[in-house]
Length: 343
Image 1 (spheres, rainbow, N blue to C red):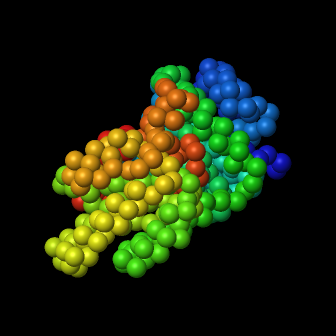
Image 2 (image 1 turned 120 degrees about the horizontal axis):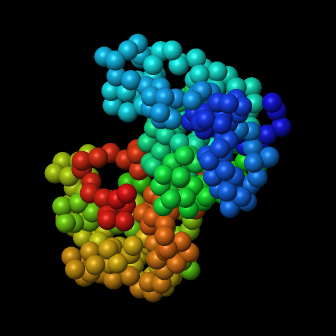
Image 3 (image 1 turned 180 degrees about the horizontal axis):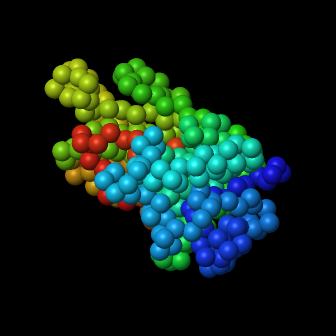
C-alpha cells in the first residue's frame, strides 16, 4: 500500500461503494473527482479509503452512533456530538482504519467530513479545524488536514470553493511529511525599554508594518505591531493577571506606552491590517490617533480575490498560512472578538 503521498479518508460507504467494496464511487465519487480536478489533483494520485467500510442505515453515518440509553456504546472514544457515542459493534472499523493508515504512512492524510475528523482527529467540528495542517494522538507523527466531504458539498454547494482551497493546500503540503510551522518572534509583556528598542530597530526602518487591536468593554485591551511576517510586538493595557486589571503599574508609564503607540502608528512604513476601519475608528474616536500611510487591508484584498469566501482572520489564516487553528484554543469570556473574527 506504499507509494502514495496523499490519502483521502471518507466517512462511510454509499450504495455503489458497498456493492464493489471501494470508497468514493457513485455521486460522492463523481463530486470528489470534480473537486480534485479543480484543485489540480487527480484521483489516481490519491489513496482512497473510508472510516466505515459499510453502508449505514438511511445513508446517514450518524446511524453508526447512538445515545447511551439506546444501546451498547464505546465510551473509550469521544462523543461525535453531545450524547452521541459510537455503537460498540462498529468500533473495529476505527481500529482497522488507524492500522491501515499507520501501514500506509502517506505524507498527508486528508480527512473528509465531520465523522472522519472525529475518528482520526478526535473532533467533529470540521468548520473550526478545516484547512489547517495538524497531527493527532491517534496517529502520532502523521500530518493531517481536514476539509468537508464530497457528501457535504453535494448538500451545501456554498462550501465547494472552501473545499477546493483546502485541497489545493493539501496538494502543496503533500510534498513533504513534515509539519512545518512558520517561525515567529513575538515580543510579549514588554517594558518601555523593550518597546523603544523594537521601534528603533524594527518598526522605524520597515517599509511595511502590520497593526491590530483587541478590544473589550469599549476600550483597547492590547495592540500589536509587526515589522515583518516573522517579527512582532504586543503591547498590553488590560491585564487580568495584575491588580485592577492594569498592565502598567503607574499612570505615567501607561501614558508613555500610549505615546509610544502614537509614534509607532506615525512611522513612515505603509500600514496593513485586517478590517482595519474597525481599528482606526477605535484609535481615532477614543484616543485621537490615526495611522500614517495606511495602504492595505487583508480582508479587502482577500475579498477582491475570492468575493464569495469568508473574510474572517481565522479563515484567511487557514487559507494563506500554516499556522495552527487558533480560534478553538482561545480563552472565552474575558475578551470580546472583533466582528471580522466571528464565524
